[in-house]
Length: 222
Image (tube, rainbow, N blue to C red; front, side):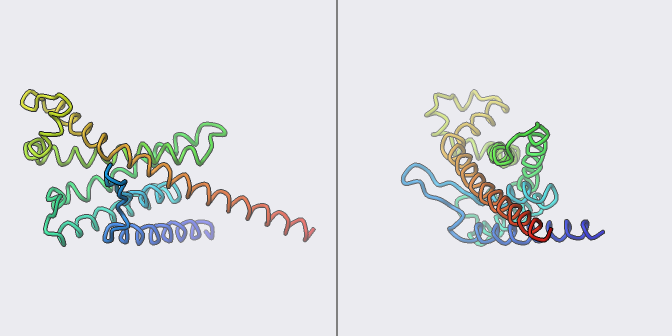
């Protein structure tokens, strides 16, 4: 019973800490990284990734929900700003609740492989989770506001040699997804991998030191 309580308390603590971090990233400029004149990438989804990796499915989805709600609040406070689509909770909230499922599932699957490095598993889960996050957000926008989205990105699509008027519904979605990945998505995947790898490496290193210290203490009591 004690182990169950400790596990529950740990998950609540992780959810609280990373949920608070998600709020800070969403409501301040800290959540955005400007890469010179190349692109502006967001790291606001990373707390949800870390929650799924450290504490499991429910904490990951909970922090994802917090991320989505703060994103919605930010958009409302800005009066729509540059992203009026995010005024709709189906765009700003729902995809953020779902994508940590992929992070958790990929990580669990990779760790079933004998001796698969935990840090590498986390990095790959972060990469795929970031991609799926973009795919889900763009899918929700495309389903709800497809015509407006294509109109807004017409110049980008044509620069890739695409005939906007000839795009099929499925082709239109993947064309828009390609534009997003080229402009921001690939940088966001790289950023997520680097940050998650750094955090996991630090945590595992600290855990290793604690284990060695505990073993020395036990040996000293023998």
